[in-house]
Picture 1 (cartoon, rainbow, N blue to C red):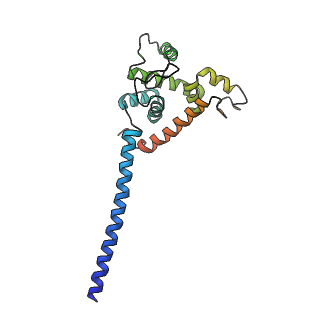
Picture 2 (picture 1 turned 180 degrees about the vertical axis):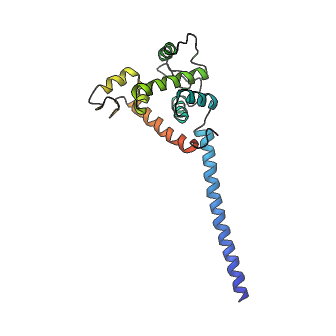
Picture 3 (picture 1 turned 90 degrees about the vertical axis):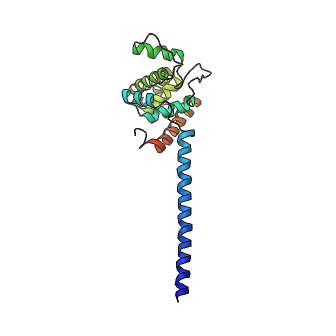
Length: 195
């Protein structure tokens, strides 16, 4: 009888040890994946400046990180075929437009902090103008003129505020990428970024 009890407890101990080992292995793997995602796949570089501008302009900092991730992959020297430069990929014409609205005479779009400040100002301007995040993102990518034209065309918009479909494939993919990246950033950082 005593031998049977000892065997039962040994077996139970071994089973619990295996279960706990599996649990901790899964937990550890999940934790490691989260850390890797944060550091390598969805970083928060230029954090202080992004958070400062997000607060100043009343923007979601995770949306700004998403835009930077999609636009430049956090490369401050990024340049597009269309002539957009820097972290938030601002063209010289758009930079000039932003500088006039802000009353800035001298600026350098290749400077990371200036690029983020201009990009955040412009994003806030577009959000106020179009009152819809996806529409504002379309304007950030395709330009205000194109978006105004689409909103006034019943083929693309019924309410003149939101777009039923986006005629430029590049812009359609851009908005989709930003939104997908935004979801990832929210999942990884929503409750810890400001701490």
